[in-house]
Amino acid sequence: MQAVRRVAGLLAVLVCVLALAGVPASASTRETQLQADAFQVPVPAVPFRDAVIDRPSQAMARTLASSSHARIPVNDGQGRSAEIDVSTLCQVSCTNASPTDVQNLANFLGSLVHGDEMNSVVINVVAPAEIATQCGPGALSCYFPSTDLIVLNGNDSTASDGATRDYVLAHEYGHHVANHRHNPPFDDPAINWGPKNWATYERVCEGVRSGVYFPGSETLPTYYSNPGEAWAEAFAEHRLPGIVGWEWNPSLEPDANAFHAMDRDVLQPWNGPTRTVVKGRLGAGHRRVIKSIPTPLDGTLTLKLRGARKSDFDLLLRDSSDRTLAASTGLGSRESVTHTVCGEANLRAVVKRMTGGGRFRLVELVP
Image (cartoon, rainbow, N blue to C red; front, side, top):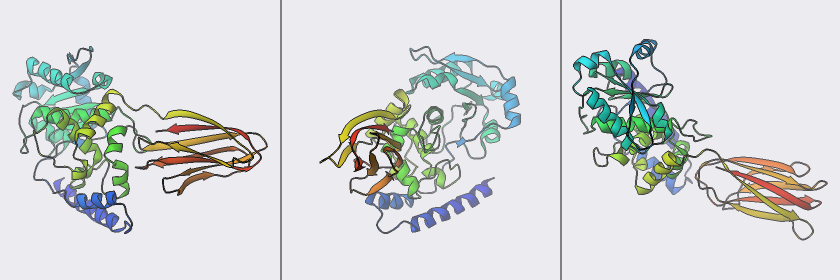
């Protein structure tokens, strides 16, 4: 398995180098910095923090189905709880899996910034030998998004990079939060890119387009440029600062603003575009109307125009340098454009009169 990972990692590095070589000389300063940062990510000598695995194996699923299911209050003042199970082997061999230890785990979960996704998390506390079987060689823990399952060590050990069991649990819970947040059209749920506010602030879309970030990668070395993993690590860092050094891509290292964006994603999650209606009129002496469109978040921007009958209005979307990003120029005045916002700001909608005149209605759906 380790040999497969090494080969996959070398192939990923080659893909990264080829992608970076293909970026034109006119790339933005931000893209240039992203590219430079890609080569600053060392191959860490520490274990994998975790692995995100689509779904448990059939054998593991049967074991989980036959295990006891205990709901433990997390004591967050909101009545939320988590399901925490202890494997049979761990019950007789683990050092930190007693009922008191389980309640302490639940209390720690309640201390993390969280929402109602807490009620769906399942934690399987297992013996160290079971970690390798269920999560793969080298992983300290793992998360199964299809079942909301976290597999956690039943011994309160500390990893070689200083990560405590609480730190690893916080990282896994970060994955669980992202698995219950949205970031279309890039990722839905947001487990591979990170939720929308954080991903926009960290310029994940721009990094992916530049060939620097690798959403969903669970192999070395691109694991450390996986924004979904960086989100989870930043989530742990938010709760337990200074426990470990930042091992992920330097461009994704969190600052205060990243933590603020993270809090918004957790406590006030993005649930869809903002709808705004603009009304106006075009006629003699008024050939066009230009409307500024703020784009605080990356995502899908949609504009829909409905104009007067027997008129011909066009609809264009332009950036701050007056470059046309999208246009709808059919006959009549029923037009619509869609554009994926990726780090752009100060966009403008242009309603242009070709023939006729009269009132129009422009609907903006802004991410």
